Length: 258
View 1 (cartoon, rainbow, N blue to C red):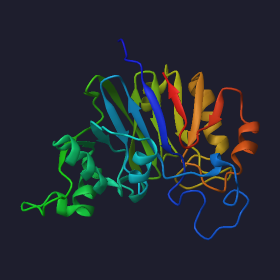
View 2 (spheres, rainbow, N blue to C red):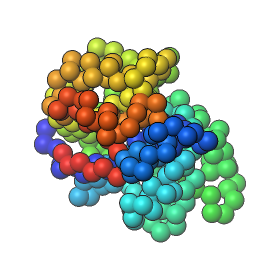
View 3 (cartoon, rainbow, N blue to C red):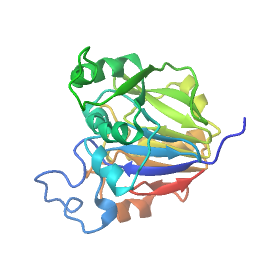
View 4 (cartoon, rainbow, N blue to C red):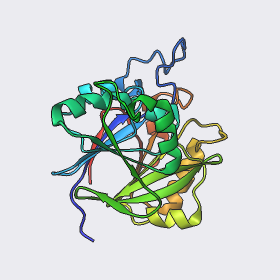
């Protein structure tokens, strides 16, 4: 299969509390390095024709303004946790300027949460100006948005099924601490693999630094980036120096082309 060239922008690379964390005086939260300032986790995937945002975090509005985004064709959701869905209301601006519904792609678990958290957007009688959303239910079957072909990858966030996504030669996985062997096969052959790393210590529902490095080496992906990073991991510059040559910490605003 021939894949279009893709531009990937990291809109946010922090964990649910962001970095700096409210009221924290640790060396990471007080760092002056811009790479230690992390909004909640999200990426934007763009071809020449199509723009997709993966997850609308509580920082979605600012992320769109910072990157000067004028058009989004679709929102793709990984799972229903608040740090990944809370910014959905702000698609109203895109509704206004495009004069069309926003296509939203999610599994049934996430759809249920969206309808509960944003009930006003799905009401039979809508108040003027609420988000105008077209829900598209996805499973583990591959699908396309515009000219971008997408393969869902199911991972485990403790006991919650979360969707990672492969876009051509690029695979994105957030909020996971386990991937079944069958789903790992979907990742193999990627040129770039992005996966969550919370901290060095083990965690109940996220990969630790050592676990993520082991996973990358097992899958033999040529280049990998870590995201969903907490202040507990350490300073960006210090951790980056510890990593193998083919693995890097992602940071807000990072752009890669594949």
